[in-house]
Image: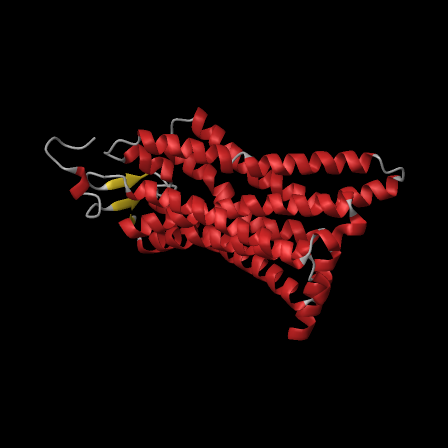
Length: 314
């Protein structure tokens, strides 16, 4: 709470923000730095290779791989929003982040988090058309529609991020703000604010209900239609082939929403913000790192494209 007589509106921009990170143990800092640096480099390498493979191979110039390259770009950006600042603080033994830096993190976390959610929904629709209407796939999933779907995903993600930016920028903080996280988590900022957050809380729940409910609902509906269509296929081999085309996407969906739901449930059960921070590593660091491997390990087209690209380089 604010001390009596202090005007919170005059204190916000002059306040120091401190990211307490994952652990206060000095002996763990080098280990955490090495671990997260390795994970970040793997994330960058895996997703960049995915983008380069799609761009360099004409066989991958299809709607699905167009969406996958945008998903890889979202993964790179999402991880870059949080991990480099954490690595810098670990290396310099500093916990500070500027007010502007905190607002920037909030904006980009929601921008790329929502973008990933919407792109997963677009990929589910792409798989629905590919399996349920294979003869009309290229007609329905035209370059114009694919571009429009990606542009709309970016537009709505930008809209959500700007709404969260405006909400957080209206908050007032009294003095040095210690955030028990490795990035500026908006929920923690609402808890630490001196000003009234009731309106912000209502808006957060409203936006969360829309953008946290519509994409998963679209994915569930798409897979309901896909499974219904596959079950009507008489050949067991054809059923397996149809299911295998959705396996990678379904794995990424489960990883993304599963980790997000796990963090939400852990925060509801646990009263420790530091444990919530550890749990959030799953969707901010681990998921972007694993996504390109999930899509490439079971995908012969991606493997062949990467092989051709490496041979051209060598």
